[in-house]
Image (tube, rainbow, N blue to C red; front, side):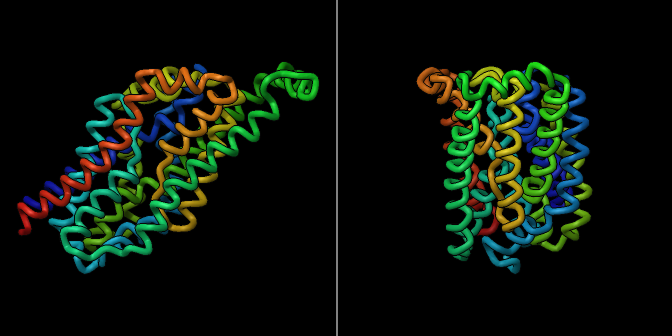
Length: 320
């Protein structure tokens, strides 16, 4: 029964992660009306699986043994961690807010570490530091590069002349950048579902990544366009150039975290980059006052706390 519940929880978790992850990868081009939801889900599935199979094992290692000792990862512990993270992510998706799969997964694992009184403090501090530093870098880089092309002036007139002449190549580049983001998600976020399974020796990391990755795509298709609308249209609508810029910056930073072996939040990277665009356009005050933005920031705070607390409480009930 416990094994069956674990498998069901993994499937549920992976599909919800796909529903949340498709927003920061294709939300920008969807907001710019460059692609339908169905095609976005297909491309998302393919490139996410490719990223998981080629780069994802580094993050799996951290989540399976880098926060709490692998010896403590029984099947029951893996079930509780995945269940707690899945419930938190489901609530965020239900509220139409893209949430970090890494935040809720690490928070649930942290709750287990607190229960067992066995936490790898050094790795945890490195992860939390990256959660702060990388979104800040995304914000700064986006401002730096976007200021080169906006607002229009004599200095960047050449750029707008090229944009007018190369509309089709720019659209293709925007779609390529979204696929690049999906690849980066596969390299990092699929490990959130595989890590606890690998930690409890239920599955080999590589095969776990390859099997679970397509479930992300299924979730991205079933969730439909809820979270993509929130990121791409309700907070700061993006055009062709800005969507491409945001995608390349956030995907590159996520791949850096994957190579280092740490789970990282693409949702926060993407949202901070989009907010940087709004800042340059003098929309930062308006964006912060929007109900969608306020709701998003609140859920970002509550969901990880809920995930960690739920994991700790369930361990107290069933293990204590």
